[in-house]
Length: 403
Length: 233
Image 1 (cartoon, one colour):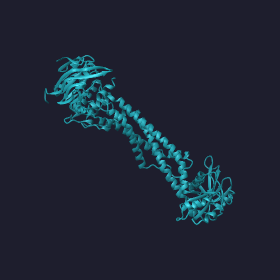
Image 2: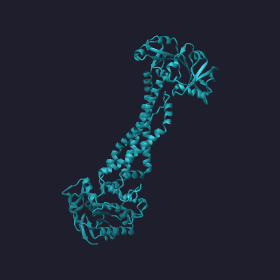
Image 3: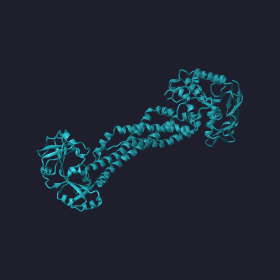
Image 4: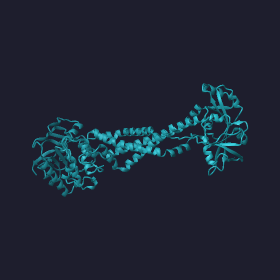
């Protein structure tokens, strides 16, 4: 910055130049604050992103309740959303018991099967098949749109409908044949779905009867999706369903609660890390500014001799602290946005279940709040060094270095 | 300028320090009057109280006893002095300071360093043309240099410019050539003399350097916190 003639220089300019004196120290402090901000933004971004994605996934299910065989509630929740492993079966007779309840608007029986396909990817992978009833399933999933073709021609047809990603991975189009791994049975592709952003994208749908026959699970189901009348009480209906033998009911509310409870454990861990990171960066700021003040005691004495009041010195030191925090906050925000995909990837690896959409949602409000919080914390941590500098008497400060 | 009008008046001032339980009188019943336009050099052996006296007269410190008035305002009387903020207001109105070390901000240019006092206080009638002031002090080609690029003599001249930018009534110089060789010391001495003669600037100088002291109009020799001798160099 060029200073013209006799114009005065701003306090900001002096503060900025003061920070530039010990570049490495200032930079390290800024990096410390940036890391704390990064963790803070990512954590809160994850909090809202995960919840939004979970809500979206549940909305896309198309039914409010799922009846599954008795077992671990976490597995049931995972099954409901992702169709995972550890499958438990129930007899399809349960469908008749459910349908007779007056609250039920429609039901759809489903059978999930998962097989290892050695030809999938570079070292093989799991393929999920979902056997669905062509008469009821499409009505409960109006959000599923076809890129090509349509649903099955017959309830027992040797046909498949492929999710968007499954079709891309297998490079199949309508009219192609699909070989079921391990079973050596060829099925005709009759439909390819558009991308839905849910687990349906990676699923291969078969008519329920066909899948039961191929895998030798005749009369068996893994789940039954239930849509309840709008006027019916979900809680009362749940009570009724709990009385059915050997099955358990998972409602959307339960799923959300179960998964969010599971996730909150991980969140507490991350929050603790964020808190530690913030505490460390506060200590870093106090240390940096305090050291800077102690090193400049004599100079501060001269400033006071030249006419700087205690308030001026306080403002100068506080401004230096604010600048460090603001820079750290901005850098942290850039890091959080720039690495959100990587963070999301790592979180997916850590969590037992993650919804299909974006896990981290960072918006301008969150960024501004986080930077504001960091600057506020920085300002608080700058109070002590600024106070020490402000209360120095000029003569004592000037003498200090010589003693 | 009111020539020969009193700007600082000290009557029987004392400064007593405690060293453990022992009381040390750094300044002992000393009276001195400084008129506008004076150029006084305080000389004497180490420990004679020169710097302590300068600090008292320049309102950097409060006397333990006696009366001190600056520009007609009582700064201290009978053990009662002004608060630190009141002293600051007097300091910035009346005094400019230079010390043995220059204490320039190393990351600011010469011009910026000289402008620093304006950030905190710009007196009515302060220097309007800082480059002209720098030119007068022989720094016209150094304005955009950093202190690290200057010689010791140049750095002290920058410190003098910084002290003069608010047009103080009195310039206090505490061993201003302590870090300089004899040639640069002489230059600074001549500069102070010039400022006194041409601009009528009141200067109070503390020095061990007899050659520098000879530039002053009046020399006051101190011994044990008292005036031992006063006269022209």
